[in-house]
Length: 108
View 1: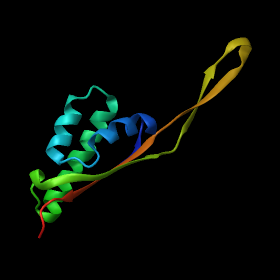
View 2 (view 1 turned 90 degrees about the vertical axis):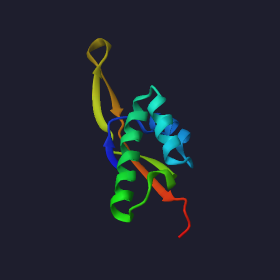
View 3 (view 1 turned 180 degrees about the vertical axis):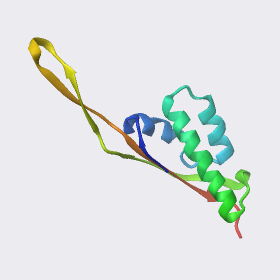
């Protein structure tokens, strides 16, 4: 889980669709080859989820798959941009909450 990532959720969702329901090794190699900034963030969150699975349940990364990737909208930072005739145009710098859930494919 990565909360408050400084990237718009719609940009992350485009990359999240690529790895949803894929085996972890395939998802890691796919994210490593993408040139999107969101791919680096998702790769970091995915590697953290795999490390947590290895520590807590002693699972092999080869036997894991991405169950779900959820990208929620975080708190928007309100900013201002100066416009013509002394006016100010307001905009929101959006943030994301990224959650990756993985599961084991082996039956125990």
